Image 1: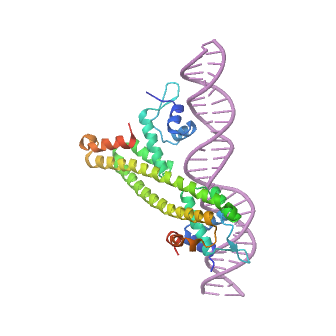
Image 2 (image 1 turned 30 degrees about the vertical axis):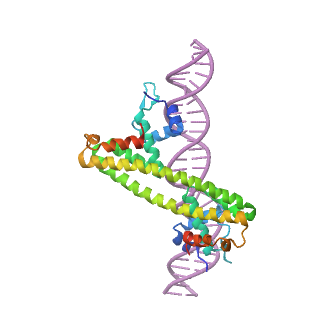
Image 3 (image 1 turned 90 degrees about the vertical axis):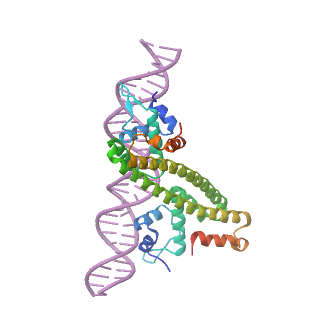
Length: 142
Length: 142
DNA sequence: ATAATTTTTAGAGTTAACTCTAAGTCAAGA
DNA sequence: TCTTGACTTAGAGTTAACTCTAAAAATTAT
């Protein structure tokens, strides 16, 4: 019923160094210490780490994640701020996903293009594969 | 038919500083200079910048982007390496997109949770909205 | 021609997020 | 008890990707 920093490192894939750094930055104000000063992580602390990794994975800075955690520690008076933060993050995430979709199209075009050239040489690529020329226009415009 | 660094900055949203930095890092070996030393960007240089932004947007480092550009400058002997690089990047991108989808689920859960609490208080959230408890299990596990 | 704006360079400074070091403390196994 | 390995802290160092400065040169506008 309590994990050492090393066990948490293994579970999460973060290093012990990183976990201490997160704590120093104020991201883990709920992690307890044993009498002799060792960190003792609970299961709910692991849930927090999952959320932190989620927010980090959507491009939120540690500073903004700390803001959310500070609001959480402050109690019910910040419920609205927290809700609004998640809503903003959802919009950002949707924007990101559609951006990635566009990037994917460009990369798919490049793969088609290079595949064609590797297979048949670069001369007359678009004559041989007119759809590629059309795709280029669609993906890169002009 | 050539753009100054300031015009390119406006078109791309990058700063002139950043464009010079990219050049210094070897990302723009094809950009020409005027007789008096001013950079002159062509339309195809803009296409390159679009591709660079695409690769950067999918998390590729400038170092790896430079590798691709170096291969390009090297000519047809590197066609295969370039194709393989795009294939790897496509896999990375697919992984990223599915990761973002998972993050989206967590954020949606949080929005549902906070919306419920903001509307009706925190007591008996899950009794009032049992689907939320089920969703929590699905999203956070356990 | 003059003034204002833009661009040039080399190089220094910044920021976020780690990442590592050293010197010591704690805990578990033989 | 001894040893080995994990943990502690404060603080220094690293990396990527910018971001800015200063002084001079080029270009554009009046």
